[in-house]
Length: 117
View 1 (cartoon, rainbow, N blue to C red):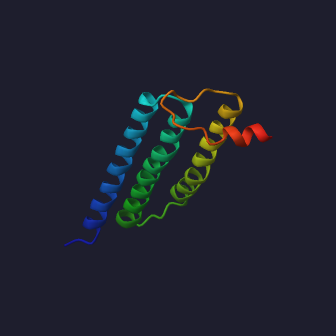
View 2: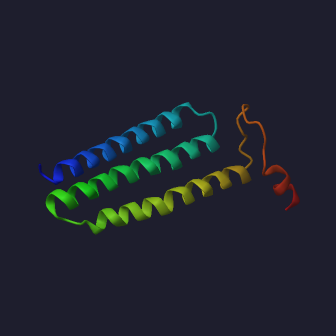
């Protein structure tokens, strides 16, 4: 049995999992009610989806072709670093601009903190 066959299967599973997370992120962007929950869907699941796809691609090319791509590694690093920070900054700017929360929101934890400033 070839050693790369199980690794290829793992790479395929990672890429498929990343695709599913990206699809769920797209559904979250369409279905969720306000900017805060949409930002959460976009940052968390899309980041995980992109990371799984990039890691699966890195693993596939490393095992089958013998090529370790520094570009893919940097892509993983920068997506992991920038996407959650960007989502946080967008939500913070929306909150400071008085964008309303959805009606379904139960509590606003920042309301009393922001009043004190």
